[in-house]
Length: 261
Image (cartoon, rainbow, N blue to C red; front, top):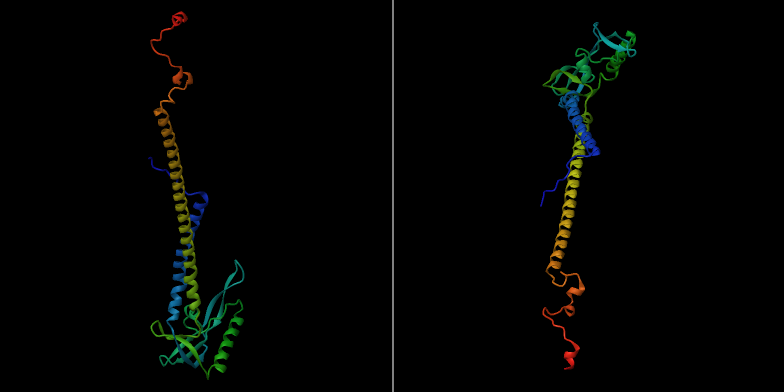
């Protein structure tokens, strides 16, 4: 019997679904790398900081001014000045004096100052915000201990007041790329499995049809053989095939006179 030829080509809808799955897989891998370098690494480093109890030692405001960049529209940018505020605290983890920073972002932005205000065009507004934080730590927090975060290995001379990255950031950095990756893989696997099942069903259907055709052909050939072996069915003329109508080979006619004598 000849081999069955089954079409393994994907339809247009199946081809689109496979392309969608591959696109989601590529997006998941790419976003995992991007978020891993931009957010995951700083978050892991931030989570390595240990909590400690800090008390304010001194609050200083040097004469040095720092620049910041403000935006006033799509094509409008400029620079303004703000005063530097330095808050020195004593942390219970190392029992040493360290410079307090608001969070990791401000530590990277300006490691010399404790607070970097949101940049405004007016220098006086920037100064007023810094003075509010100076009054807050001088009058309200000076006699109280508060929780700070300390990392002995990375920055032994700095402590953080708040974490800018927490476990929620870590969860989102891992969750959404994995969801995209798993969803794309699931779409590709379901499409391939559905196509393979359709191919098997088509092969079984063709095999069944070929078996029925062969069975019909064998039945017809058996009927022809049975007709050829039957002697009564070889001659279709009823007069020639009837035994009552056959005559002897050397028959002689008899006259009536011969019968009387």
